[in-house]
Image 1 (cartoon, rainbow, N blue to C red):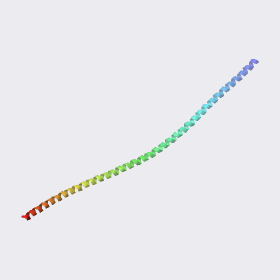
Image 2: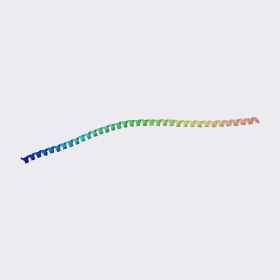
Image 3: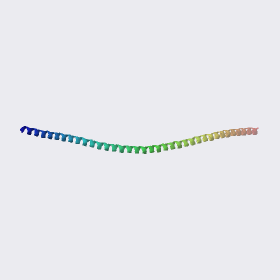
Image 4: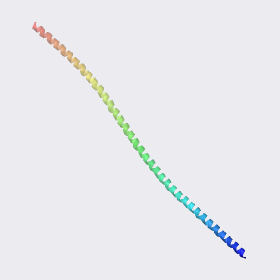
Length: 130
């Protein structure tokens, strides 16, 4: 009977040891599950931050594109305005050169008339002197 008691007590100890091993496994698994849940929550939060950042970047990029388009339109208008001013300046320059040429021709003609008048006057004075 003594041997039976030891055997029964040994079985109870084996069961208790097995229960303790199972409890340790359970605790270890619960820690792993908790760790995975925490990691999943961190990943979800990180994903949300990245998603928010992406949306902000996309919005900022759209604003930047509108500004860039507006700047391009302003640049094109300034270029066109400058081109118009430049055309007008060239046209005025051509007109001024034409007026200058006309004045030169008129001045030359006036000198020729003056020279002719002086020559006529000189001849008439010489004729009167005789």
